[in-house]
Image 1 (cartoon, each protein chain N blue to C red):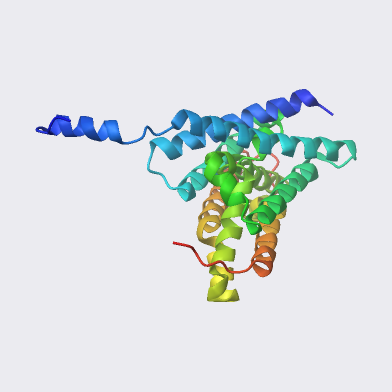
Image 2 (image 1 turned 180 degrees about the horizontal axis):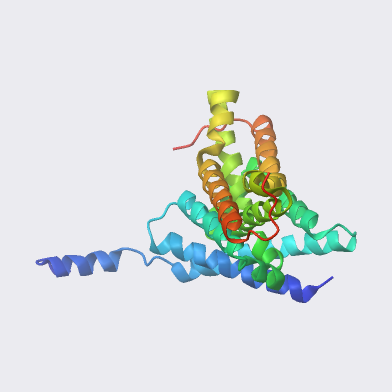
Length: 122
Length: 154
């Protein structure tokens, strides 16, 4: 097991979260907007090929934050364009992120089935 | 206490009374919780590598396991407590994305399974997917325009 890599993942992932926390505390952006900003930024950085360096350096420290999800979308679009041409720009993004999106929807639905609807105490 | 006469006095009074936004403490909590989630992801990733799973699939397995854990903890109402404590530390990793799907799904269950659970699931995740996917398509289209060397136009 590569402990050095785990420490790097911890530090880079933590720093990405600190940036988000500063955005929450210092600006009036809602969490939803911050998530959208992160995904869009990750997609752009992934499209430019910059995000790849961060993943090489920090592994899951770069892929687990939502910017990594954006990077996955961009990478998928580019690799699918390389193998399938024009149509790849439309199919590639979701294809590569399918595991994450599908599991989030599925587990979300299951969770709502087994949970009791709670009445907010206020 | 002396009476408040001017606007400056009032401002001073307000500043004294409002608690300082504990941004340093928030950042520290966000750092270690966010870092810990990423480190757990990296441990899962290393384990997948040892089992001989290729890199792309390993990253997908990491995302899926973290999403599952997040959904599970949200159901038990634990994730909301972590979220209050850690702020962006649990929001920015993929766990926050999962939580943003699961928690409205649970909350709107009483409105029915189609328009309650099915529709409200995407109140936060919807915009994320819309902007993420749209940007990725634009990235793909720009890539077509500027890297035409090994392109097969159908």
